[in-house]
Length: 268
Image 1 (cartoon, one colour):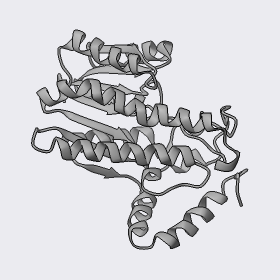
Image 2 (cartoon, rainbow, N blue to C red):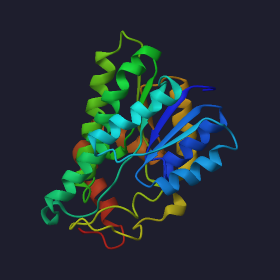
Image 3 (cartoon, rainbow, N blue to C red):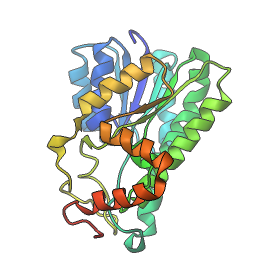
Protein backbone atom coordinates (compact mmCIF):
# COMPACT_ATOMS: atom_id res chain seq x y z
CA UNK A 1 0.00 0.00 0.00
CA UNK A 2 3.00 2.35 0.14
CA UNK A 3 2.37 5.49 -1.94
CA UNK A 4 -1.03 4.17 -3.07
CA UNK A 5 -3.75 6.83 -3.17
CA UNK A 6 -6.61 5.73 -0.92
CA UNK A 7 -9.95 7.55 -0.51
CA UNK A 8 -12.05 6.73 2.57
CA UNK A 9 -15.53 8.17 3.03
CA UNK A 10 -17.09 8.41 6.47
CA UNK A 11 -13.57 8.80 7.83
CA UNK A 12 -14.28 11.01 10.84
CA UNK A 13 -15.09 8.11 13.21
CA UNK A 14 -15.50 4.35 13.60
CA UNK A 15 -14.37 2.01 10.85
CA UNK A 16 -13.50 4.89 8.51
CA UNK A 17 -11.16 6.50 11.04
CA UNK A 18 -9.57 3.12 11.79
CA UNK A 19 -9.06 2.48 8.08
CA UNK A 20 -7.39 5.86 7.63
CA UNK A 21 -4.96 5.12 10.46
CA UNK A 22 -4.21 1.66 9.11
CA UNK A 23 -3.49 2.85 5.57
CA UNK A 24 -1.39 5.76 6.86
CA UNK A 25 0.72 3.32 8.89
CA UNK A 26 1.40 1.43 5.65
CA UNK A 27 2.64 4.57 3.92
CA UNK A 28 -0.38 5.24 1.71
CA UNK A 29 -1.48 8.67 0.53
CA UNK A 30 -4.73 9.02 2.44
CA UNK A 31 -7.76 11.10 1.45
CA UNK A 32 -10.28 11.36 4.28
CA UNK A 33 -13.84 12.48 3.60
CA UNK A 34 -16.75 13.28 5.91
CA UNK A 35 -19.19 16.08 6.70
CA UNK A 36 -17.36 17.29 9.81
CA UNK A 37 -14.23 19.13 8.65
CA UNK A 38 -13.09 19.83 12.23
CA UNK A 39 -12.91 16.09 12.98
CA UNK A 40 -11.17 15.47 9.65
CA UNK A 41 -8.52 18.10 10.37
CA UNK A 42 -7.91 16.61 13.82
CA UNK A 43 -7.54 13.14 12.28
CA UNK A 44 -5.22 14.53 9.59
CA UNK A 45 -2.91 15.84 12.30
CA UNK A 46 -2.76 12.35 13.81
CA UNK A 47 -2.12 10.70 10.45
CA UNK A 48 0.80 13.04 9.75
CA UNK A 49 2.76 11.01 12.31
CA UNK A 50 2.85 8.17 9.77
CA UNK A 51 2.54 9.87 6.39
CA UNK A 52 2.98 13.41 5.10
CA UNK A 53 0.41 12.81 2.35
CA UNK A 54 -3.02 13.39 3.89
CA UNK A 55 -5.90 15.27 2.27
CA UNK A 56 -9.07 16.05 4.28
CA UNK A 57 -12.07 16.92 2.09
CA UNK A 58 -15.40 18.00 3.55
CA UNK A 59 -17.93 15.74 1.83
CA UNK A 60 -21.60 14.90 2.17
CA UNK A 61 -21.82 11.73 0.08
CA UNK A 62 -25.57 12.16 -0.38
CA UNK A 63 -24.75 15.16 -2.60
CA UNK A 64 -23.55 14.36 -6.12
CA UNK A 65 -21.57 17.60 -6.38
CA UNK A 66 -19.67 16.86 -3.15
CA UNK A 67 -18.69 13.40 -4.42
CA UNK A 68 -17.50 14.83 -7.73
CA UNK A 69 -15.46 17.42 -5.83
CA UNK A 70 -13.92 14.72 -3.61
CA UNK A 71 -12.62 12.85 -6.63
CA UNK A 72 -11.45 16.01 -8.40
CA UNK A 73 -9.57 17.25 -5.31
CA UNK A 74 -7.88 13.85 -4.97
CA UNK A 75 -6.72 13.73 -8.58
CA UNK A 76 -5.50 17.34 -8.47
CA UNK A 77 -3.50 16.62 -5.31
CA UNK A 78 -2.16 13.12 -6.02
CA UNK A 79 -2.63 12.55 -9.76
CA UNK A 80 -4.78 9.42 -9.57
CA UNK A 81 -6.66 6.94 -7.38
CA UNK A 82 -5.73 3.40 -6.38
CA UNK A 83 -8.35 2.55 -3.76
CA UNK A 84 -11.84 3.91 -3.07
CA UNK A 85 -13.50 2.74 0.14
CA UNK A 86 -17.20 3.59 0.32
CA UNK A 87 -17.60 3.51 4.08
CA UNK A 88 -19.92 6.44 4.86
CA UNK A 89 -23.22 5.19 6.24
CA UNK A 90 -26.09 5.75 8.64
CA UNK A 91 -28.53 3.34 10.27
CA UNK A 92 -32.06 3.43 11.68
CA UNK A 93 -34.19 1.70 14.31
CA UNK A 94 -37.98 1.72 13.99
CA UNK A 95 -40.81 -0.36 12.60
CA UNK A 96 -41.44 0.43 8.95
CA UNK A 97 -45.14 1.14 9.58
CA UNK A 98 -44.15 3.93 11.96
CA UNK A 99 -41.24 5.32 9.94
CA UNK A 100 -41.35 8.60 8.07
CA UNK A 101 -40.53 7.98 4.41
CA UNK A 102 -37.90 10.72 4.59
CA UNK A 103 -35.88 8.45 6.91
CA UNK A 104 -35.80 5.67 4.29
CA UNK A 105 -34.91 8.22 1.62
CA UNK A 106 -32.02 9.60 3.69
CA UNK A 107 -30.56 6.14 4.27
CA UNK A 108 -30.72 5.36 0.56
CA UNK A 109 -29.13 8.73 -0.28
CA UNK A 110 -26.16 8.15 2.01
CA UNK A 111 -25.62 4.38 1.96
CA UNK A 112 -26.56 3.60 -1.65
CA UNK A 113 -26.35 6.80 -3.68
CA UNK A 114 -23.20 7.91 -1.85
CA UNK A 115 -21.53 4.71 -3.04
CA UNK A 116 -22.85 5.17 -6.58
CA UNK A 117 -21.77 8.82 -6.85
CA UNK A 118 -18.23 8.33 -5.53
CA UNK A 119 -17.69 5.18 -7.59
CA UNK A 120 -19.01 6.79 -10.78
CA UNK A 121 -16.59 9.70 -10.63
CA UNK A 122 -13.63 7.61 -9.42
CA UNK A 123 -14.11 4.76 -11.91
CA UNK A 124 -12.07 6.15 -14.85
CA UNK A 125 -9.09 6.65 -12.55
CA UNK A 126 -9.51 3.24 -10.90
CA UNK A 127 -9.68 1.51 -14.27
CA UNK A 128 -6.48 3.28 -15.27
CA UNK A 129 -4.68 2.11 -12.11
CA UNK A 130 -6.41 -1.31 -12.07
CA UNK A 131 -7.31 -0.37 -8.54
CA UNK A 132 -9.86 -1.37 -5.92
CA UNK A 133 -13.40 -0.31 -5.06
CA UNK A 134 -14.62 -1.44 -1.65
CA UNK A 135 -18.04 -1.08 -0.11
CA UNK A 136 -18.43 -1.40 3.64
CA UNK A 137 -21.79 -3.12 3.75
CA UNK A 138 -23.29 -5.28 6.49
CA UNK A 139 -24.76 -8.66 7.30
CA UNK A 140 -27.98 -6.64 6.91
CA UNK A 141 -27.16 -6.64 3.19
CA UNK A 142 -27.67 -10.42 3.18
CA UNK A 143 -30.48 -10.78 5.69
CA UNK A 144 -33.23 -8.27 6.32
CA UNK A 145 -33.10 -7.05 9.92
CA UNK A 146 -36.43 -6.14 11.55
CA UNK A 147 -36.51 -2.55 12.71
CA UNK A 148 -33.89 -1.65 10.06
CA UNK A 149 -35.94 -1.63 6.84
CA UNK A 150 -34.13 1.34 5.31
CA UNK A 151 -30.72 0.13 6.42
CA UNK A 152 -31.14 -3.39 5.04
CA UNK A 153 -32.66 -2.05 1.80
CA UNK A 154 -29.73 0.32 1.26
CA UNK A 155 -27.15 -2.38 1.94
CA UNK A 156 -28.88 -4.92 -0.33
CA UNK A 157 -28.84 -2.22 -3.03
CA UNK A 158 -25.18 -1.41 -2.42
CA UNK A 159 -24.18 -5.05 -2.71
CA UNK A 160 -26.15 -5.54 -5.91
CA UNK A 161 -24.55 -2.46 -7.44
CA UNK A 162 -21.02 -3.53 -6.49
CA UNK A 163 -21.59 -7.07 -7.77
CA UNK A 164 -22.65 -5.72 -11.15
CA UNK A 165 -19.64 -3.39 -11.17
CA UNK A 166 -17.34 -6.36 -10.58
CA UNK A 167 -18.89 -8.45 -13.36
CA UNK A 168 -18.93 -5.62 -15.89
CA UNK A 169 -15.25 -4.92 -15.30
CA UNK A 170 -13.93 -8.43 -14.70
CA UNK A 171 -11.72 -8.23 -17.81
CA UNK A 172 -10.43 -4.74 -17.07
CA UNK A 173 -8.46 -5.48 -13.93
CA UNK A 174 -10.79 -3.70 -11.51
CA UNK A 175 -10.98 -5.19 -8.03
CA UNK A 176 -14.32 -4.92 -6.19
CA UNK A 177 -14.68 -5.89 -2.53
CA UNK A 178 -17.96 -6.23 -0.65
CA UNK A 179 -17.06 -6.12 3.04
CA UNK A 180 -19.71 -7.15 5.55
CA UNK A 181 -18.81 -6.68 9.20
CA UNK A 182 -21.13 -8.06 11.83
CA UNK A 183 -22.11 -5.83 14.74
CA UNK A 184 -19.12 -3.52 15.25
CA UNK A 185 -18.30 -1.20 18.14
CA UNK A 186 -18.74 2.21 16.49
CA UNK A 187 -21.01 5.22 16.74
CA UNK A 188 -23.36 4.09 13.94
CA UNK A 189 -26.02 3.01 16.45
CA UNK A 190 -25.71 6.22 18.45
CA UNK A 191 -26.37 8.25 15.31
CA UNK A 192 -29.03 5.86 13.97
CA UNK A 193 -32.31 7.53 13.03
CA UNK A 194 -35.57 6.83 14.81
CA UNK A 195 -39.02 6.77 13.19
CA UNK A 196 -39.29 10.57 12.94
CA UNK A 197 -35.71 11.09 11.73
CA UNK A 198 -34.24 12.20 15.06
CA UNK A 199 -31.05 10.55 16.29
CA UNK A 200 -31.49 7.50 18.51
CA UNK A 201 -28.81 8.55 21.01
CA UNK A 202 -27.70 5.70 23.25
CA UNK A 203 -26.82 2.41 21.57
CA UNK A 204 -29.29 -0.41 22.32
CA UNK A 205 -26.51 -3.01 22.16
CA UNK A 206 -23.52 -3.90 24.35
CA UNK A 207 -20.68 -2.32 22.37
CA UNK A 208 -18.01 -3.96 24.57
CA UNK A 209 -18.90 -7.41 23.25
CA UNK A 210 -18.51 -6.46 19.58
CA UNK A 211 -15.55 -6.54 17.20
CA UNK A 212 -13.66 -3.27 17.39
CA UNK A 213 -13.45 -0.82 14.49
CA UNK A 214 -9.69 -1.37 14.46
CA UNK A 215 -10.09 -5.13 14.00
CA UNK A 216 -12.58 -4.59 11.18
CA UNK A 217 -10.23 -2.14 9.46
CA UNK A 218 -7.35 -4.61 9.67
CA UNK A 219 -9.45 -7.32 7.98
CA UNK A 220 -10.62 -4.93 5.24
CA UNK A 221 -7.09 -3.76 4.45
CA UNK A 222 -5.90 -7.37 4.16
CA UNK A 223 -8.86 -8.20 1.89
CA UNK A 224 -7.96 -5.28 -0.38
CA UNK A 225 -4.30 -6.32 -0.47
CA UNK A 226 -5.34 -9.87 -1.42
CA UNK A 227 -8.00 -8.52 -3.84
CA UNK A 228 -10.76 -10.64 -2.34
CA UNK A 229 -14.31 -10.41 -3.72
CA UNK A 230 -16.12 -10.71 -0.38
CA UNK A 231 -15.36 -10.39 3.29
CA UNK A 232 -17.80 -11.51 5.98
CA UNK A 233 -16.80 -10.90 9.58
CA UNK A 234 -17.64 -12.38 13.02
CA UNK A 235 -18.70 -15.96 13.61
CA UNK A 236 -22.30 -14.80 14.15
CA UNK A 237 -22.28 -12.96 10.84
CA UNK A 238 -20.83 -15.90 8.90
CA UNK A 239 -23.34 -18.29 10.50
CA UNK A 240 -26.26 -15.98 9.65
CA UNK A 241 -25.25 -15.73 5.98
CA UNK A 242 -24.64 -19.48 5.64
CA UNK A 243 -27.82 -20.65 7.37
CA UNK A 244 -29.92 -18.12 5.46
CA UNK A 245 -28.90 -19.75 2.16
CA UNK A 246 -30.38 -23.08 3.21
CA UNK A 247 -32.95 -22.30 5.91
CA UNK A 248 -34.33 -18.81 5.22
CA UNK A 249 -37.65 -19.32 7.02
CA UNK A 250 -35.90 -20.64 10.11
CA UNK A 251 -33.54 -17.66 10.02
CA UNK A 252 -36.50 -15.26 9.82
CA UNK A 253 -37.57 -16.50 13.24
CA UNK A 254 -34.03 -16.51 14.62
CA UNK A 255 -33.34 -12.95 13.50
CA UNK A 256 -36.69 -11.77 14.85
CA UNK A 257 -36.05 -13.33 18.26
CA UNK A 258 -32.48 -12.01 18.41
CA UNK A 259 -33.38 -8.42 17.51
CA UNK A 260 -36.43 -8.44 19.80
CA UNK A 261 -34.10 -8.91 22.78
CA UNK A 262 -32.62 -5.44 22.32
CA UNK A 263 -33.49 -2.96 25.09
CA UNK A 264 -36.54 -0.92 24.07
CA UNK A 265 -36.95 -2.99 20.91
CA UNK A 266 -39.66 -1.54 18.63
CA UNK A 267 -41.19 -5.01 18.35
CA UNK A 268 -41.59 -8.04 20.64
